[in-house]
Image (tube, rainbow over all chains, first blue to last red; front, top):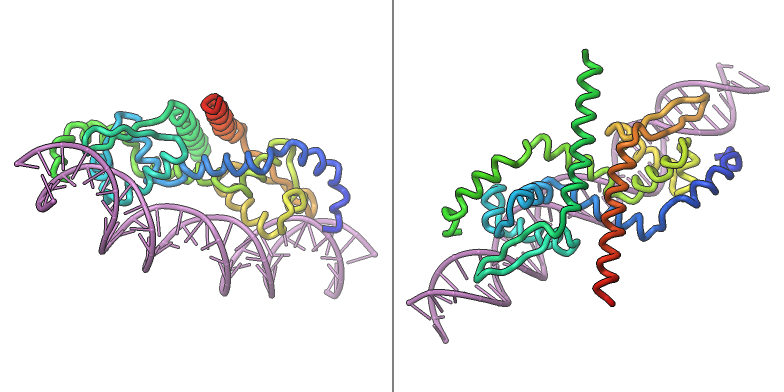
Length: 121
Length: 121
DNA sequence: GTATCATATGAATATAAGTTCATATGAATG
DNA sequence: CATTCATATGAACTTATATTCATATGATAC
């Protein structure tokens, strides 16, 4: 790293533009939520309709406990919310931002695949 | 789960709308990339300018090795690319989609904070 | 109150993932 | 061609995280 003094100016510049550590952690934590297939499948399910825990578990072929744990994570992050109806608890998307974010990821993959196909021609 | 038969219709409906397993994994893998503060900080750095490995390492106060490992992950996922100039290797964003996706996450956090502040009034 | 059903939760376990350390590669330079 | 500098890489270690299992909670119905 003997050249380190050479990029001092650039480093100062970039350092200034980096978001605060707290913001970076929050951002990473947000994306981490989408970085798991179980949570992703739960969210996609809730795109269609609110659902109770056991319905989600059955749909995804997983135990009620596993689903409950993940629902808790998603709820604590305010991506989903729930309402009670007797013994049953229905979960639903808290807002539409989730759709937008996942949609962007989706678009990226589609575009990437398009590019790869073109390369292979 | 004795009630399982009751949501059969809903389950069939939602099952139809769920993306294929492969797409779900790719999506989760994509978001996983953004779910780590080191990678997030690398990407934010590259938003400003292409950079060599040692500059990034110095900027983030991390070892060259740690940065190299993460750059490899990001490159394998086609989020970034690199070019060689003598001994130095410069990394840069592969496309602007990354900016868009992270931007969406950013917006979500901003909005969430706005909502929380309003609640506390 | 007791039984039952839906869900939540804590602890244990298993697996994934990030960093470090030592070392390898690969280009430039004398 | 030996040395130096920038980067890459494999293995070991460490920490985070997802699932399971057993059990708790909380609501309903009898």
